[in-house]
Length: 160
Image 1 (cartoon, rainbow, N blue to C red):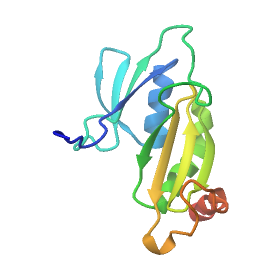
Image 2: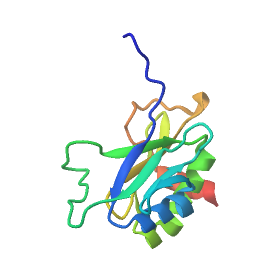
Image 3: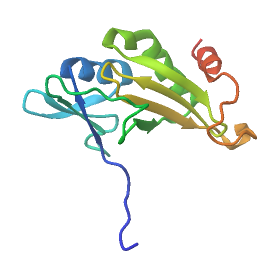
């Protein structure tokens, strides 16, 4: 290949309620609004110095079809890596405690053998996944993407 892609830049979410989506991403997930275009198009990032924006939020049109991750063609989720299991547990707890105020909910918490994940869905059905790699000495024998035990129990225990 005569070129190299460095990283994913951003994803654009069209939502039914921009203020609610922006508030969820800021108040619960911890993104910060870095810029905006007009009154209803916001650019949010967890690391604005190294990545201008990771998510852009803009309004959809009245009556547009909502995402259906089980049956749609196209993007199913966005995924963000966190540093370690403790950070993942804190995100899990924040979504569990406050996500409902914004129409968001946790869909799954999984131990996949080499990573732990938390998958949530916002009020518009957009799926956001957070994950951390396990330290080498904690990686199990299970094949990737096979649920090993209760990740939810581990996340609950880590947060208490």
